Image (cartoon, rainbow, N blue to C red; front, side, top):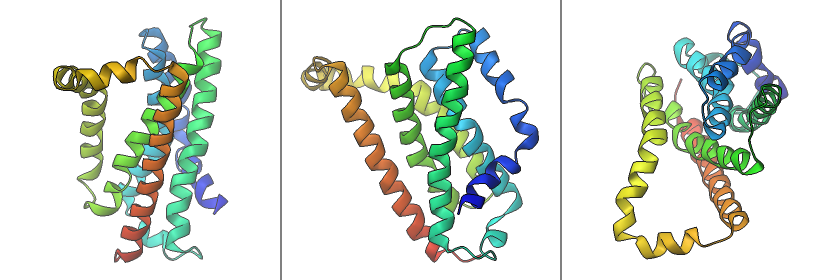
Length: 201
């Protein structure tokens, strides 16, 4: 299964040459650290998914000596590995650029990344190739841009609940947020496994 995880890097040799310039671009644009960590985390996993969609690689993967559960597991576990590596490179880049960031920024971006991945990964096994990546990109912009607007809309109707949550210590908030993100990521993993097991190639 390690070879399946490593495959995502092998097929992206050219794209990975742009990885550090990609980070530098966001640093020069003075983007928020949370956005930088989130975007760089998406770079490798979603480039790999876009490549798989274009080449319809599932036929090849299913001819290899791996079960379908292992193929899905490699996708979800590999995503965690590449997220951690990408955030590590981003931390080094921000430090060298003398840009400030906190552990809270990292934790928040990890939670957001897991949530977004949990929502979109199953789409790659449900929707037809050709429609998936545009939908995922649109979902990302709605996810990043629509989140704050949605919270403002909810402010009036759920003001008491929001005030209660905001009064909680930051450590409690982040821990709860990460716990929810991990649970949803695990559910997404299970859903993708079930769909992929039943899918005909």
